[in-house]
Amino acid sequence: MEFSEWYSDILEKAEIYDVRYPIKGCGVYLPYGFKIRRYTFEIIRNLLDESGHDEALFPMLIPEDLLAKEAEHIKGFEDEVYWVTHGGKTQLDVKLALRPTSETPIYYMMKLWVKVHTDLPIKIYQIVNTFRYETKHTRPLIRLREIMTFKEAHTAHSTKEEAENQVKEAISIYKKFFDTLGIPYLISKRPEWDKFPGAEYTMAFDTIFPDGRTMQIATVHNLGQNFSKTFEIIFETPTGDKDYAYQTCYGISDRVIASIIAIHGDEKGLILPPIVAPIQVVIVPLIFKGKEDIVMEKAKEIYEKLKGKFRVHIDDRDIRPGRKFNDWEIKGVPLRIEVGPKDIENKKITLFRRDTMEKFQVDETQLMEVVEKTLNNIMENIKNRAWEKFENFITILEDINPDEIKNILSEKRGVILVPFKEEIYNEELEEKVEATILGETEYKGNKYIAIAKTY
Ligand SMILES: Nc1ncnc2c1ncn2[C@@H]1O[C@H](COS(=O)(=O)NC(=O)[C@@H](N)CS)[C@@H](O)[C@H]1O
Image (cartoon, rainbow, N blue to C red; front, top):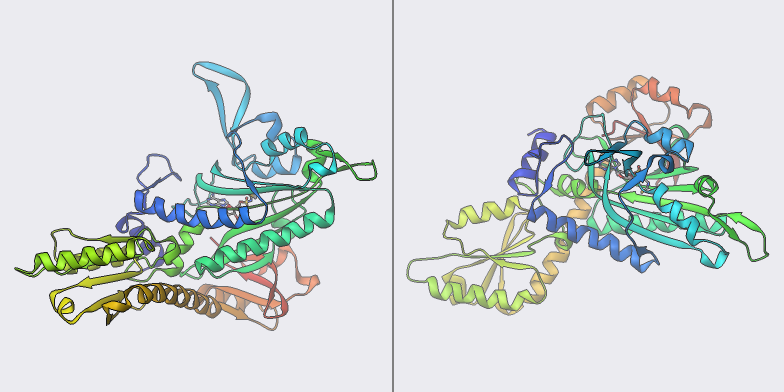
């Protein structure tokens, strides 16, 4: 099955997301998908909190004059902004934007908060919905008009070096985040012509979807003093001088959820990393005539043992076991325990791991350690499998040969790496190869220009 068909099919069949909302680019997180989202963003929350960030919350509405303050920024977003013009029947005297991202409201407030260098650094983030009137083809969780899960971090520093270090910290936070989810990535510095509006430079994480196209899953921007000059975020330095704050911002969105689904899934359905799985272990009692009671009793006993440590569920629906197996395989539940009369007699436990579709038996005394070990093993396995597929999508060429590049990008697709040369690194190259320049990147110790077909 072709990837995009598989993808929209699984969103529905695994009950993750419902695209039938009557506005293009807007959809509904169903309970199962919402839990995956919750566990996923809990990871990034913890990583940010552990590295000195504080979560905050800013209004969604931005007055037109505020949004338009930073010239590059508004130029970059003016075609994407949704506007509110009325309050009820009353026309508003100032148009209000639905935030496409929150530099302008946040930096307006930072001006009020920052007076002296000891008020810095500020490291805050919010996880909110943002709005972008995307004109390109919208796709569920990938290219939304209402970006429902937009984690944006914004920092302000008293020195250029500290802001530079913050970019490095943001990159290492994202590496930990994607490594925890087993999502492979290539980190590149976006070319000048494709950086974030108002930034000095943009670092980006790109992953490769099963159809071979790359997906930008995170960005880190060094904003320099562009916004602090516009918003007058001025502080008194230790020597009594005045200076403008040095800033960074970095964001991820629902695309992280899309990547978990797309990268780890197989033809059968989802394969969820245990850390984000709403159900980590599903217990399926095999009901045989006359043995219902002992089977259910054992199932409950296993449930009670596991529930303190794992997210476990007993599927006691009155349907055939095969139907149950199928349902939980589609939903990507990492581990299944089948409880039948024979196993009970032999004091055995039958387990099934979703990533390899293997079934195996252990003594019931080993239950806890085997569940723990297998879940960890599943995480390692799906991460390695994802990186293997990713590496196979990378083609290193000695030189720019437009025809060869076009050929590879239409057949194999993936990312093409050519040795970095300043003289060819320009927008014309994109036209020549009819593809996107992701940027300059380090790969296995060498410096390359990365070229790909992107989402
Ligand atoms: N329309 C969209 N739908 C889903 N995700 C999106 C969309 N547009 C951007 N993203 C994701 O959001 C991330 C951050 O967006 S951004 O424009 O690159 N950066 C910012 O907005 C900065 N303020 C950092 S928070 C992107 O890296 C991309 O992964």
